[in-house]
Image (tube, rainbow, N blue to C red; front, side):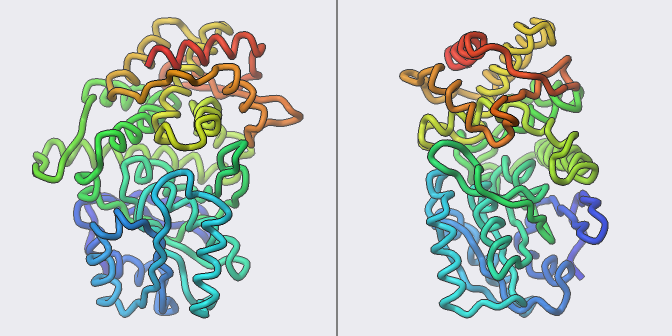
Length: 377
């Protein structure tokens, strides 16, 4: 049996329930966790990662898999959103076909959200569906993208327009891996964490705001208080998302609240060709824009919008938004995958800790709000 992790968050999905194990050093027990979750039927993992992550953690992963008598075929993809494409998925499928990977195998994503989304999507389609597991190594992936079963790839006009719901069997979030993140990856993750505070937990929002900026590095062992803060924040975000996903797995209703900040954020990523902003950074700008929309449509008090904007700024410096056209961002919104009947709807806060779904305002209002957000974060 695997060792007891510091924190385990269950995702209650009846016969597809799974656990998120959170704590320092979990990667070194990935084999034991996988054996417990998959049972003896698992013989081989197709491990999907990128060169940067694999150089850091591949040795630990392989050693742990060998100890659990699980084989590994390793596929390394490019690093960044621009590689989250059908073409990369095709390369992964061909890799599996050439190695005669059969249904008794499973995929294992070792990396950030790009790796996890791509691996999950490829697993959902390969041989009409094989199981997969997640070992997220970025803050954003640990608190958000590794949980909930949304998988997909990007297209030039929009993010995640091609994908599938495919739940993992297991998530192992080793908080020690976060110490090797560059500052912008920390920032990206904290923006997503702030999202959870705005949509569901005002106390979490307050704790995060008080702690920003918060980063660890490879040369400093975190204090007990820092370790506790980090683990509990990851766990709390996962608890919020796990509860939402358990009640609305396929986004028929409540799960839409998780898209706060993402409508404008995804459009910004698309118009900048997934090269300028980390996903979480774009979401941070999108949250500020959504709050401004909420103020201008009478949904949110200006003071609360100002608190969100200040929290986003406190996380850390954003890349320059110079040259990004608000009109282009608004045009890109029309391709949002959540649009219905050609109309875009927004998740807007009514207060910090509470959100609702609303129709989009006029394009003129949208342009003003997007332009303001781009200039003020």
